[in-house]
Amino acid sequence: MSTALDALIGIERDLGTHTFTADEIVTFAKKYDPQRFHVDPEAAEKSNFGALCASGWHTTAMWMRLNVEDMKRQVRAAMERGETPPQFGPSPGFEDLKWLKPVYVNDTIRFTRTLNGFRELQSRPGWAMMQMSSAAYNQKNEKVLEFNSAALILLSA
Image (cartoon, rainbow, N blue to C red; front, side, top):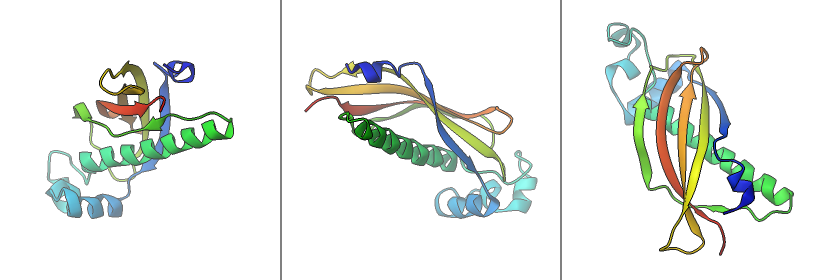
């Protein structure tokens, strides 16, 4: 395994933040999760959430966008240092996805990813499976999202 990658194990990486606006929440929800508490502010006030809130899928999709942007930055930085960066491959999926608290209008959410380790694949020489845990926190530092995931990584051709 790469020493540079091994050095990242156990370190929580900040992927960035995003502030969820009412228009964005409603637009996403109308297309992908049209429940009353995501698309109708008045109905949301009468729901168990008490106010308009983002779909959990919206929150998770924003994590994915920031995650991919971060991986691209890491690859560029490695290349600028003269290193050959690993090639990131697809993910077999998520486990234990939990939406712990609602994300309300104007909440600023901070997204993170922690590399937990690698497992080299016997069936694919040069490839490994990265195990990661990810989370998101609101401006009060309350965890609103968490999940575990994996992704393929090409270590050498």
